[in-house]
Length: 230
Ligand code: APR
Image (cartoon, rainbow, N blue to C red):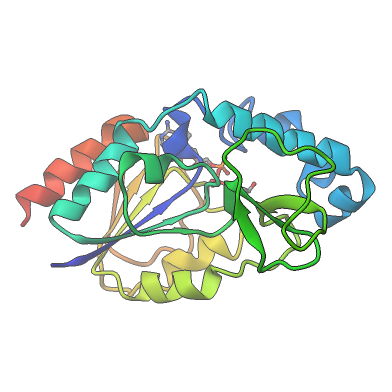
């Protein structure tokens, strides 16, 4: 089976009703990154940061995977699929994808403030300010804040380098190091991009097919195209 790597961003979850970051009315038009998504913000105003992620976790209980997440999961019937996502939602998991690398963390997990390796599942939507980890320390969202390292990046580069085909869905390719993943793919492999907009394609030197559609329409369409090439 050919190795197919799917690299996703907020745009794949847009059709589930989850706002993206940089589109009009995106998350970063309504919140300042320095107030809710930096280690300094967590130190300076813990309540606001915890509430921001509580609000996003609560939103998860109201949405479900869309046709794009489901089509990505279906690809596992014909390809050796790995998903690398920048998204912190659990929609790829809920759609049935079995191998997912979260580059920027996961909403449904929290971690110890003193031991970053102590990560716990958090099935509730609300984290109370006083909730503690098994080691007794306070908890924080298991999210990669701006300015923090991206522990899963090395693993993601190895996955990207192993791809025979790369599918990029719903990312502006504006945030590093995540965006540089397209550069780790072998330069000869085909890249399929699904996005109604125009991400930053400067790093892409591969044969590129841009399907200018919303993910919920474009990803199922791509699955049919790829199946026809088997
Ligand atoms: N279907 C497909 N793509 C879409 C759709 C849709 N329905 N709606 C919007 N898009 C595209 C936009 O054109 C854009 O290219 O999704 C992309 C969204 O870009 P961003 O909002 O920048 O999201 P993303 O690329 O995932 O951001 C990367 O930035 O803030 C950090 O950690 C955060 O993981 C996030 C990272």
